Length: 188
Image 1 (spheres, rainbow, N blue to C red):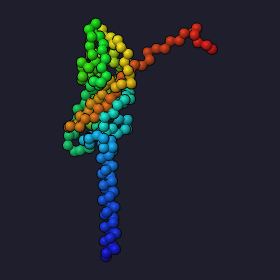
Image 2 (cartoon, rainbow, N blue to C red):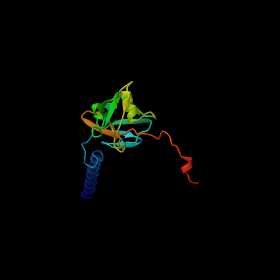
Image 3 (cartoon, rainbow, N blue to C red):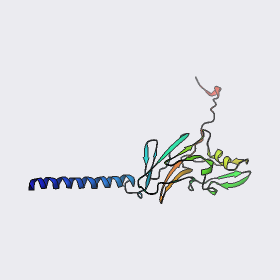
Image 4 (cartoon, one colour):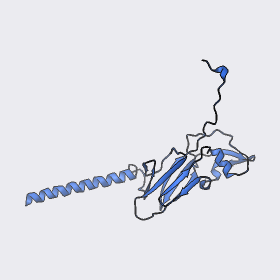
């Protein structure tokens, strides 16, 4: 009987140790190696689990983000598209100078659809910061005079559940409008 009791005791000890290792692993994963607070939710984008802030998110024309809750409470969320206040630049509107940071919330200028457990952000092919600013300042002449550093995230998607916040940084890039070649300078 004592042998059976020792085996059962060893089994429960191993089970407790496995439980503790699993709990530590869970918290390590969802706090990014104990570097951030434990969030009450996570986001799934392109089959990737996002548990904390992320920079340089590569967006496509149609982007679906699933919101997954890690707790049973707070089953609602809020989404905004905000500018990155670290990326400021000057531009003119009808000759008057403005700063990019004068507007913080750009949500209404993006094609954002929010549903119960996901949201979709659609980006048109011709979306640039200049085109976005032209949307903000309708029927006005907008000029960006300085060269922008497109390695920076000029915007971020802010998702809030209760007191937990995840920020997903992204940029709108200038695509190639056309390519022209000078036939006289091409050696064949």
